Image 1 (cartoon, rainbow, N blue to C red):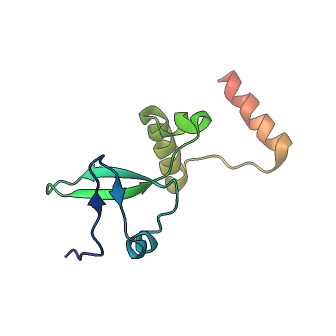
Image 2: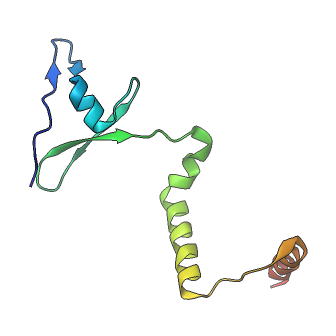
Amino acid sequence: MSRVIGVVTLDRKGRAVFPVALRQEMGLTDGTQLRVELTDDGAYELVPAELVPRDQLYFHTPPMRRRIEAAERSIREGSSTKTKGESETRKFLDSLKKS
């Protein structure tokens, strides 16, 4: 069940005014960007958006997300290799090159 926590007013230029109490409730500060999401039931939701630095965008691409999910699955299933220290890690990585 939803509850109304405030009302946002638009001016004629399309700018939105969020009352102080609403900004505090939502944790909005100067410069906060809001992502607008359309839910499956047709409602619109405003979600505070965190921007990703350009040099980290690769992390959020579908191929990278799949690789990360596969790695996490391997760890959960115990099919990953754990090494101790730099020399053991280097030895393990070198063994992969020979395969």
